[in-house]
Image (cartoon, rainbow, N blue to C red; front, side, top):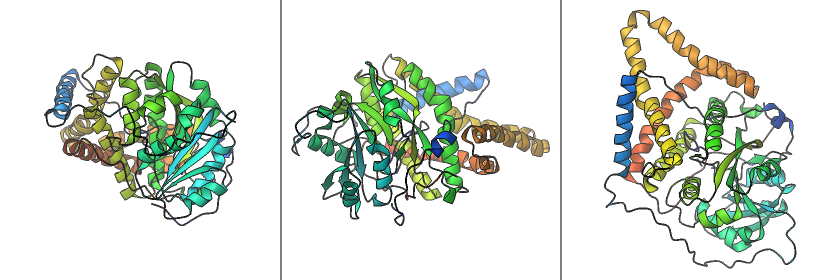
Length: 446
């Protein structure tokens, strides 16, 4: 399966991300879309004294220099603009196109969830599926569900599979826009409509609202709880503002709509980062292809990791790809609003990962005689945020799962440090392939 990088990043982020026993196709209902509110990936804004802020700013400058150091060993990123015609571009049958939007889904062994994904999109757009070397019934199920299918005999990775499918079907030639979905994404009944409303003349990419498919079967799963909370918080506090300023640093690889002329330019077979949509986002900004906007009414339910191993690996891939992009596209070296805001975001990451933990430790050390009071105050901060999220999402059990939010918040800091090391050691990849988290049925929301 190929998953998003929404976000990824703490941004996400983020696309990251094996299959569970098959489930019969669930019919998509409209209930979850009335119950779910904005979803946000966890972000922490720290208010520090001016002295700390100066130290943090200098440290971010050092971090930026570290990511860009020794450029002679890692030359500037250059991806060929011309493509080799490895597959025939057949296009669509002669005659007018039935719809102005195509949905493209890359999948590997996604038989358990693919039918639900296709069903959610079939009434809104023409659906195309590329089976990336699947060994199960993915291709057959896609055809039975009404999609046009390209079955690849070997696994070549999500971006390469999307690239070949686009050339094979001629999507960017025959359609005004192409929505790229993951094989475990169920879009809302008016997803395409809301995305098209946002695709004005100067807009290149429209990003939908990501919502964790927190099913009744997994209603007490802490990993899903943390993701649901994180998406809500990130999209509320970060993505909306980034959209207004046109400084969005990542798109949702699982549920975004691309103007065809833009996708034709950024969709390459050999994506140099482990997160393909990170590359697409940065190329759109650097080449001035148009704005990237957020459409909160274009909702999409997605499957998220059910266990700690998958959660950590997916976050790590998203963050690794983000840092590869910072180095590969030399973020912070140009006098643009995008570069300026990205530097501020890097400062925020530094405060979150480094300064804030030391400040907390210092406060507890100084007030160690009153540590129960300090701990209560600290926990109250998390409780306030999860209570607000519980009201917004109508998921009251989030309040009871607040301790897990705290623990995973600290584990996320470890993710950051690990991703930085990986980006320094491997600033590019030769193949954008990964093992996806386990899927689960798109059942009714709890």
